[in-house]
Length: 328
Image (cartoon, rainbow, N blue to C red; front, side, top):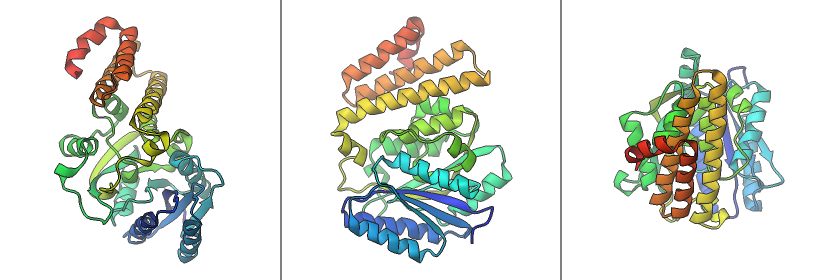
């Protein structure tokens, strides 16, 4: 039975006929079942799956959860960000105090809800809680750190060194660390998630949203106690978003647009707080553009890298030159 303290697990779902992904979904939902804190509800939004087998399984699962699941079937596929927004609106309508994001192939720590609830209740100034994670393959085996792809390893290294916390985490994400919190390891107060929805794009929608949460005033808190399990199958050459966009180059173009839009929106939100001078905001913008330029060079995207550098010079050529050596 739902109470005013019932937390909502937000699970976007899509299946195009891969049976193994249905197995992963069952494991993800089972990890919610195993929570030590039992006051939860699952809001699962199916993003117009093309597999009838998957749809039938979801209906069966919904009946088995006995009032612990809200199941929504969308008629048009619009991506995980849109599906999460649908679920967030439902959680808001139900009065759930906070939401815990979980992608369909990842696994929660059994104490995730218990620890997250305690943090939110003990620290009313915290709006976002995120944790570290372990990386698993298609068979649930832990992937050794030396076998993890560099972009994910960088996040784990950041967690071990100095995970960003507190106010204005967006600055460090934008100018230094990049991603620090994976979606399946992030929980947010529902009023914040409702006010600042994910963008409609299928690429980097989470990075954009993490920037907005922080720049709008939300404080972050990191926990090492509740590592999620993040699945990266060895057999998978790239993310579904890369596949749908037709490859790495197009992915990089779209990601660059979304990330930049997130930064510009964050600058507006930060400016509205009155905490930053125009010079300070320009400094952040230039560092972001230079960091993106470096990332694109590493990915072999010379033209995109040049464009980011040119835009930094347009903000302040002298400052760009001064910061260049510290970033490249």
